[in-house]
Amino acid sequence: MRDSDYHFIRSLVYERSRINLGPDKRELVAARLGKRLRAMQLSSISDYCSYLRTAEAHDEIANLIDAISTNHTFFFREEHHFEFLRTTALPELAGRWRAERWPALRVWSAACSSGEEPYSLAITLAETLPALAPDLPWRIDATDISHRVLERARMAIYGEGIAGHVPSALVQKYFQCGFGPQAGNYRVKPCLQEHVVFSHLNLIDGPFPFTEQFHVIVCRNVMIYFDRPTQEDLVAKLMRQLVPGGYLLVGHSESLTGIRHSLVLLAPAIYRRPPAAKI
Ligand SMILES: C[S@@+](CC[C@H](N)C(=O)[O-])C[C@H]1O[C@@H](n2cnc3c(N)ncnc32)[C@H](O)[C@@H]1O
Image 1 (spheres, helix red, strand yellow):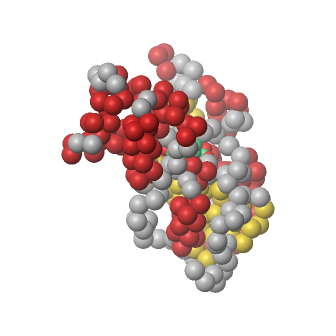
Image 2 (cartoon, helix red, strand yellow):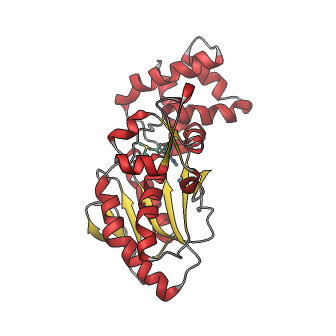
């Protein structure tokens, strides 16, 4: 790939997603663009860059971000977060709900990739809340910049690899086992799907579109791709989107050390908005 093409792709990806591609990612980018070139029947990255400069390239820029972004995820990734929800956050929030009577418990999986994270949250809530507050309605908003992963998340079909991450009793309870051409696949049951709403959202675009605040925000393994000023802006926006006393869970390699914020660190990668935080 020519220097000028790599520079152009880097700047475009940064401008649209804040994903910060270092000079060491050049080969990875070239490999991932191969798929786009084939899809568009173009013979060189320079031709692809020329197309991206045209007025009609809007949809292709979304495909470019899709191709570049890393969507790796799995069920119950970073299990200590789910343990924290079960043992600490949900009992505390259920107690507050009894006193404050919010219409629903609201959780946001920001950068949800193909759905494993929000469905893991849904299983955790479905397993925990009935004993704490059986009448408490709950809803999970799940968003991502990538249309491709959102499509997979909405289909809610996963391969047999889930058995390595989801205990078999929970697989039986919350997944339908495929047969015939779907043998080996598992579909999330409607009783979970009905609680999870997927939508497209670029975390770095303006203010968030939500009118209500969340009790828990899970924003994991995405900030790692952003530079420090972007991380700082995002954390400030996430904090404003939390109810006072709400929880923010970040990826274990995304400590907020060095970022200005007013959240309270409760445990590694677990933060809380103070009850009356000044923002
Ligand atoms: C590595 S996955 C993490 C998925 C999940 N949160 C987890 O921890 O397993 C990162 C996700 O962030 C999404 N992403 C990257 N930049 C984004 C942005 N600016 N806004 C929203 N999502 C973004 C990618 O599409 C990808 O699905």
